[in-house]
Length: 488
Image 1 (spheres, rainbow, N blue to C red):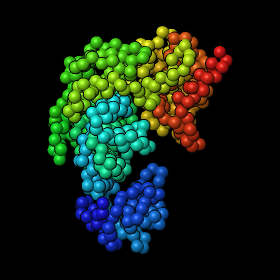
Image 2 (image 1 turned 135 degrees about the horizontal axis):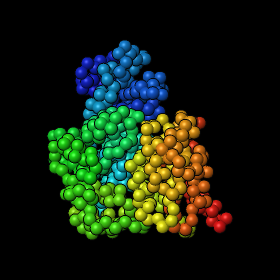
Image 3 (image 1 turned 60 degrees about the horizontal axis):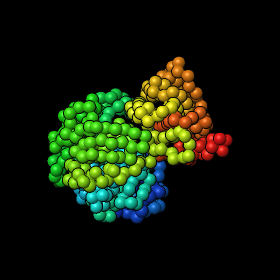
């Protein structure tokens, strides 16, 4: 794709070109990724200013820069576009540059506080079973068919996202399932993506450090349904809504398209009945009898969401049933650590009050002994949820071990103070070092107990004040089990 600098500038009112009207071969915001004839985007973040890397970008072949600095003067032999607002400019320029790649495939977006990752993986399984080439964009990774790529954000920024869609188009991907975070919606990262089906899973407290209020958080989520309600280049738009969630009715008001509701408690287009949850799986009926390998009431909702979106995309019920019954698990989502011990160890990504509550209630259904919960809360994030999560862990567990999650730049002891304010008088243990905390939980476990290690799930790192280290809850749990067995 080649575009003239003037083509891009014409898209933005009051944009100004300095220098030659050069040809542009690509858009990059990371100077390390710049190649010949790229335009380098000078993003100004909290910690990094792209303007400081213009010379590096030029050395790599950049011929122009995009900036929002009014009086910017580019270096010699480099052109520039000066725009009034960077995010608004990118939202217009980048999808245009890549010729709106998302229009070449069906796109299913999943938003909500919890359940996004599992729902996208369920849908990927269904679409693959239908013989389609599938792309996935989410918290754990990006998948282009079966090719894996790391993903630093649940929803990539607009530059990276459009580049991914362009690559998926080139590789003939037919349908994409993607997690759409509230941050991405608020920051317009999904600009230029024409969604075909949109799922709302639920809304519970999270990200208030970013959104400020639950009303703002809901408003950000609702943007996905405003987007799908607009006229586009593709037909047959559908919104799939969890009607059991109190925010479901509010989201429905934003849906000017076909709607499919789902739920367990309230009457819905797709309603689960005869739900039987066990330690090794669950059974339910929704249009069809289903015998599943995943478990937990929260996964009932994820399954219903996937059924709704698959039906909206015209997948046959028999294919949906086969795919769901073959589905095994998602990394770090109620993931059981298989070992020859008389107790159960489960690793889960739960890092919100609702996520913790869901996992603990499911554990209670499958435990014959105690529930031992290891968890912490992330640093530099919404601190209001810490005492709430502490209170839930104390109420729904038999043993609580409060520890570090990703403390980032915060003092881990201060984070634990916030958690303990919610735990109250319940007897618990406070162990800052996460590895030691996990070993302690395994040491305490007896026959019939369930050990829950919550907060990090699939993550294989821990972010400390001193930097990022390798840390995988699943690996540490297996090491702890091996040690316990050797002393057994």
